Image (cartoon, rainbow, N blue to C red; front, side):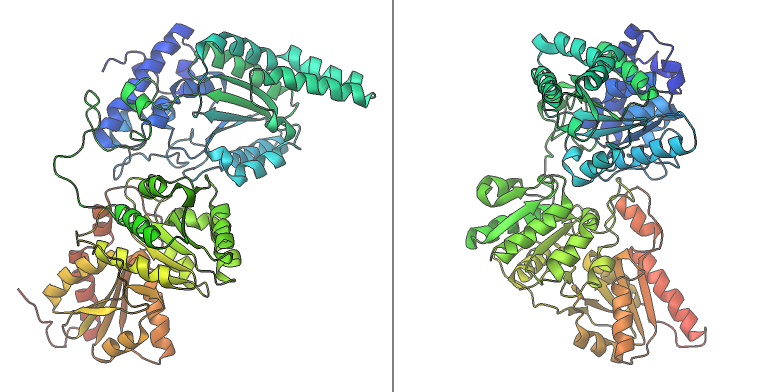
Length: 634
């Protein structure tokens, strides 16, 4: 992989000395570097191939890191990482101990704000711009946000605030990769964008306001004419209604357009005449034909050969929990026409593609709008429909008020299919679903189910659907142990667990997929294992039964141990005045970094070996070394 120019760029200051032709060559080398590394590690590809020129132009024009650059979501920042001193660490991307797939303040001074969830960039950049104003600094703040993220309410809240801060040195860059600019209008767009970002245009517009201001009808007429003139080549000036000076759209892959336009905008920012808004159009997968043709497939691929592209595995892999949910959704919809499916812009990720095809009139993709998704579901439920909200555990956090205020208080029958519960691996702490048990079980009227495998996932979804109150079913990313789901829509008893293995002295209460390593540990310990299935309601009768016949209770869960399922067991035992030693195993009170999920579970003692060791250690502490030896099997 030839990269002579790129190897000389260890920080953005170096690329500012390059000529325009050299910058174009640099873009090619950066794109090759992204493709080469993602094909080896897996990660986000299409979005990063689409932001190469934009990244180069921003670092070329602005004095980063003094000027603050905030990337919304941040999955498109691989070119940014490559150009800011992390090129040689790209082979460690998203690996344990390696660099993150998202911006991290503790990773580089160029990562000015940590992102991974959507639509936060404008708020953060505005805060930085106003902090600079308050401190008397001339630094600028730039927010780069995609067209998908722009649909979220938080982005509009931030623009509403920004529009009244007339002296804020703020630029919002809309990275629009859902449309294209055809070649015939490219030159005209480039010219008009540069013209509209220049001092002459800004001065003329301000002069027109002052001259025509005393004559409102004339001023309004001039304003309409200006908007219509712009409207010939740009979208409606919605953003100017927020008080942002709209410029564009321009070709986000054309450095000859990007750089002079950004230079003009930088001068406008120095004049402090109001926040600026630049609309750039990019293409996902740019420069790699396979990704251009199918940007969805190449959004987040695993390892692959760039010369061949993605290939289907020879043997079909085990179905994932996501696929189990998708098939259940279609099957249940076929027998109940009241079912509706809702996703906040995660059709593929949540397994709803087939449902969308089969039941388009009952499928709702509300965009990146989790708050709206939950309240929308509540409205549907009020009218007798049966909404199923397919949402990642980490994204439901964004709709917590709506969950309580709009669903739980009204006790509405909404099913929450919580995908990505527990550790998610390479995406790291920002996407980990470690907290849903904690934040759900404290809400009145809400029940929480934890299936141990694929079969139980399907059955517990049916159980949840039968209830007349809110129920969340949490399941992890990827495949389980491979227990074949039953073809029917049979359910499991609400709020009931079952004894999976009968042993003595020690009982392990397993919540979710950790049932299987718990069974493995129990074989060595001759322990009893209970598949609890429900965090709320707990199977209190079963809990008290095993508490009465065992010396040590152990809870295991792939979630935060503080306030989690183990805490629910402790509270129940305390309320029943049962005093028994309790060992709570789960995820610690820390943010867990990216890495292989199995390795992360092992590191935190949640594999079979770790469970066995923790239980032995607890027994030794309880017995003080003088009690009877623990029976070992095998």
